[in-house]
Image (cartoon, rainbow, N blue to C red; front, side):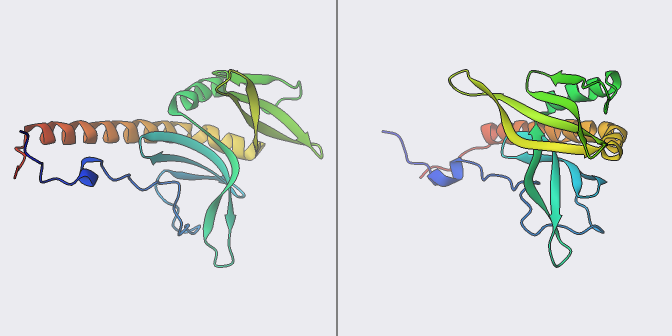
Length: 189
């Protein structure tokens, strides 16, 4: 007959780590959190880790009446894998362009130039494949001014380093905890 473990069933599953994205208290322009980068106006690029998912966001934020800054649903997020492909394409593409050039990143992200009132914007549009293998564009389009696009290009190395750092730290931490838990004796009743 097996002995019952003194550990409760709930302690067997690790608690989810709080998201660096879902910061309900927001932040101020004077205290921008780690892994957040101001691109201009109300657009930020950021790296978030939630649970086991790491994502890069390029998103519009809003400022409330108390000057606290919060994320909106307007923007795009993608995996570090897609981000690194985008970084490579930044070197090869000349966006914004007057030719209507479309850049496709890993069949999931489309970049093109949108002209609004004679002002060029770089448009980022996600393209997803659903369960039934049908594909569609997601409704959230992220528009970056030429200045914001140039700022994103300037900080792309920092964002890539953040992705690698968070991936390595999370992976290493899990491996160490797994190793420690496998070697430590369990107390049984």
